[in-house]
View 1: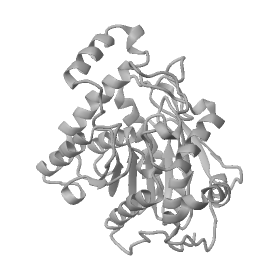
View 2 (view 1 turned 60 degrees about the vertical axis):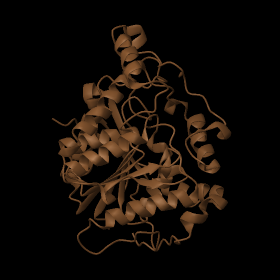
View 3 (view 1 turned 120 degrees about the vertical axis):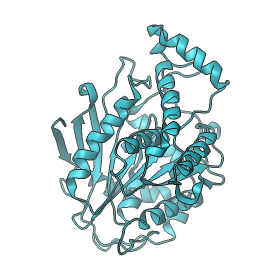
Length: 364
């Protein structure tokens, strides 16, 4: 049974109805030079026309999501964000996808963003079972994708959101026509050998006070200066992300619990072991300067797909050379390379007239 969903319009109370909107093909390559004007002008106008909704996820945890839609669109992209992220961070991604002809649905995973938290200390990144993320995703898909009758359905996932999407595709391989992963969390970069991490995590699992506490070296959220960040080279986008968390303290999530780390490592291994269950066409983008997830897991995943006779696009990860972990929030040139790759890949699976694969005039 799928719980009832509540849905509310954005401040305008309208669906998006922009007309003759022109997005030059140069915009993705020059946006940072005028980012403040873009963010407080076109992007803010776009964000104000959002629709926000909520449904009851596993164990009654409220799951929040946002939708950008047009009656003229016949295809949709579901965006699955990474750990600690919220759809509040993703207006620019939604803006670009929407103006290339796609409805966009983005949701906040349980325990983060505007969705319900699981522990009294709301800064702790926690989940009871990793499968709960996947069950929530399935409910969202049933209500906001499968029931809407789209001609084409696509998914785009980042980091932890990629691990969730991969397990969903193992469960429902026909749910999407194609899916793109950006730096998916199929393995975590650890400061110690995997066997030692397993022993520590298994030991912590038997001690509830430790199991549900911050993993060593982490704690509550705090803003890090741009110069020490390992997520992006884009100063503008990094500062904008920090402002979201500063302006909306309820979005803040700090380090993960020991239990979350244990669940994530175990599920990353399961994703690779059962990759052959996925029949969806996949594109995997990898950050060349990755310091958060383990890029070796991407190679293992792609190899498992090839061994099953269903290789990912190109047979190997598409490396965005020079990019850090948050590929979709990188500086313009790197971000544009990623978006163009994603949209070209989606266009290959439309089965009809192709939409723009770079920004162009879109009438909605």
